Length: 220
Image (cartoon, rainbow, N blue to C red; front, side):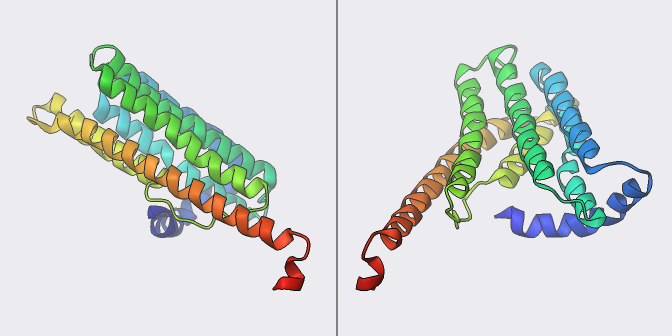
């Protein structure tokens, strides 16, 4: 849902920066790799220690690489299957680091097994949601559905809540509850999105199989 509008907005905003990097000889793949490394560092160095505010700041500085690298590739006319594969693969790595870091906090000092399990569910369901679309497309289906909570929504909801929850360290009372709420929302939304994609793939595959069946043209 957010992808359609937010991506277009930030693409326009980040286009000059992408052009600047190209003039300096930086490749889109390098931006992808550095961005993923930065997100992983921010998530795994800060989140397991409960430093959600600073972790979110670091992650936010690098998470926009996902838009910059594609922008650079288009400007340079070097968009490729390899670039798309690398970008998509490292997106999954970055997402895993974010939710894994949160899970580590609740498994350790945060001392909440239920929220640890919810964070792990968010991690796993996000991977499966992405896989269902990729797998559906790989067998020739369009998977034409905009899910309720896709990657952009998962990241925005989680990182905004984590950053605000981190203000507890600065004396803001009661704000720590935002992260647990966000995790439950993302978990529920991811489950709905998974269901949407599975139902869509089932319908599209049935339609494709029916149209390919012998005699389907004669009866149409």
